[in-house]
Image 1 (spheres, one colour):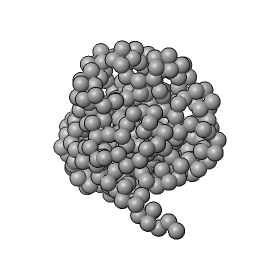
Image 2 (cartoon, helix red, strand yellow):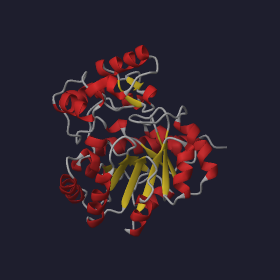
Image 3 (cartoon, helix red, strand yellow):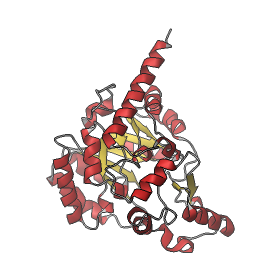
Image 4 (cartoon, helix red, strand yellow):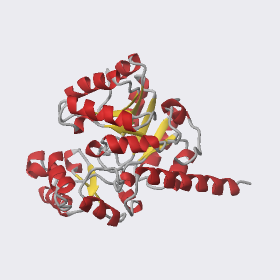
Length: 331
């Protein structure tokens, strides 16, 4: 583990050496990967909705806690407006029984999850793509916030602003710590987020070539070869923007959206919008042209397969160098 460089309200709150969150990455956030991030000094989150059942999640969480060697791990609850959220209830009880006290919520407002987490002695950081949504979550008692801009991989919402704009408008209105995410893939950017007033950075795409992520080798090879122009935002017409890898599937979706001129429905895209389509064709079979695969332009910085520990160490070494360089420029 790289020696700690920064102390912030979020490193203290979450008990992590580095001000670095590795956001809930759905099917990628399995036991080995989340535990590897934890051992490296970052805070990563398992995602219950990516497991076949609460029982499967519970088994994986137990494995993760064991592999983390005493370092804290978290659980992410994605709150959907399109699908049922019932699995969150069962998985929260499993996480609580396992002693997990660090939680990330994302998507819709966390609502009753906030007091349930607090009653269990936990802390919750809510991820928002809109300033007004972040303010509502803060008003209702979350301990911290993450704001992600339109440049974020995955689902950045319909917000048209980059993350640093959201951060600059949110910070004067809240007194709880805020992390910044979206398009971050270097330690210099992490240092820049702290310089702008954030208490941590959220980084996900940079970890897509982590050796601990359990996918076909073709996936990691393609991601390592990708540049900053290999990220494409689709489905804005459905108000469900998804920033993904540029491939035949995402280009087909983008063209179909254009052809339908704002009148598209989810049915127009069929099975390609289902998470299982990418899992079966790309993650498992290695066909990188079949499926929508979340990533931001930060994929340009994920230029080789490395362990999570090597990635975290590189990020923190870069952040330290950037901090020292900034101090040297101070009059």
